[in-house]
Length: 617
Image (cartoon, rainbow, N blue to C red; front, side):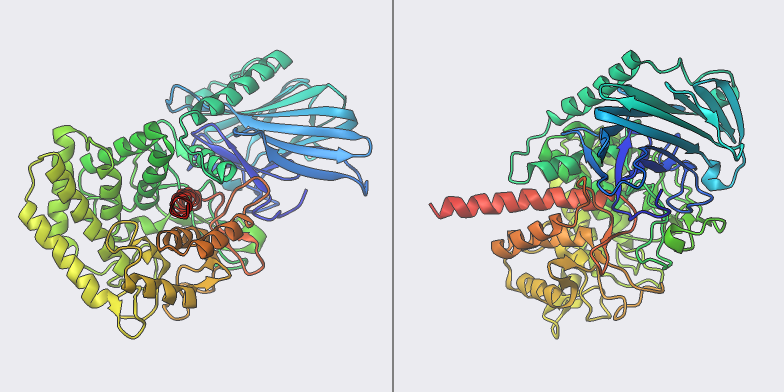
């Protein structure tokens, strides 16, 4: 086992309520259950000694010709880790069964199937759960030759196998060794049970796995993903990458509420050894709202509408404790409390501390979220009936009196509030979309007041967000630094994608933020954000850059940038948050924002390339 494999050396499996990361050597080194934002059962990704893991892999010994390869079964979330040695070829299939009922469950199964397709190979299992981010002790009960249960606080982990399971010499863990010949398989089922189910004891993990039961579960999982993908309308040039990104967005969505999380992990650093280590297992209004466009364009309207319902419920819930209509992020069930704590018993990924659970940025003021919320809701014909419209208009009425304030901005800086241009841009979007919806559907609204606010915001951005010296729109009103968040200006309709002022802004970004098609969010040295250290290029921004170039008609540059970005995907098509100086993936993984931006960039580039080809005929 690699103590700290590269962040990119992982695949993701999940059941739409929780998800696990599986390293390319067959190690489950991250799993929180029963929800994405629950405490971990396996977290060796953040501390190789204390975090806990479950490894199931072929024992390749020291064979020089041995190799390992990881891939997804096409158009599914079934992950295959393949082991190749002179003695044979074996695989471990990992998958979780999505619950079609979409009801919160206390029980979740991670199914691991070892099989040999050629020759003969020995396999090893070592299961070392460590509950509550490695803080809690557990007891171990041996039920029979193939079944044990780990009792942790409020959570049990049942391990059931078709091979005999032995107590590990340390007394706290279990292991197994078995050899499979071609055509044979063995299964290991990890079942987490929480709350009342865990308290009952006994054998609630279910009956021992059989070949027939595991085969049925595999068939059901594969059928779920193939059926879900039938809704996709995408027929463009980058089918494989767009499909993988869509599946990843689905895996990162909490099905019972329709709320997508920002990433499956917490604490993975934006710089090795740095302090920019955040918890991304929550639903950001911004990220989730922007995903609606990608999902709707692809044809996944049911998923987009599920999030809209969740968003309307947040509006209906009323004002937050700070007096704002919305908080910038929530737990997947809509709970607003995300108290941040430092887990100082964990050393962090490759000793990148502190490791944070929870997110103090939830209490920040970020005015852009009202524009993103309006952007998402306005794409639907129904904002939620009359009561939904009333709640929405109450927010817009409130915003007319509260938009002109400094805030922390889209990047959640911790260096003090500023008058961020992007925040003003998105308040303009909020007013513009609200006016458009009220006019199109004859809804009651104080249109004169909204129009006055919209036009005032527009003039302020032109007057103060534009920097004559840089010939560009800039990060905030008191700087000449450019910011990649403004790549969304033409997409939301504030400025035409070929307007001279926009093209000069794009040129300024290219000069300051772009490194061989990879795009930084901003320059922290020129615009301090209150944090030490640096960061890599931001994958979201790199894909936004592709989209802006395509819409501006710079197609050769856009296609080069897009194709170059795709080479930074990992071996199974997943992206973390950032690309480091040596081309490594950094930050939480996989990141939904990156994958939704990839989808939007592919669609925009397809459309512009098709248009150019048509005009050239």
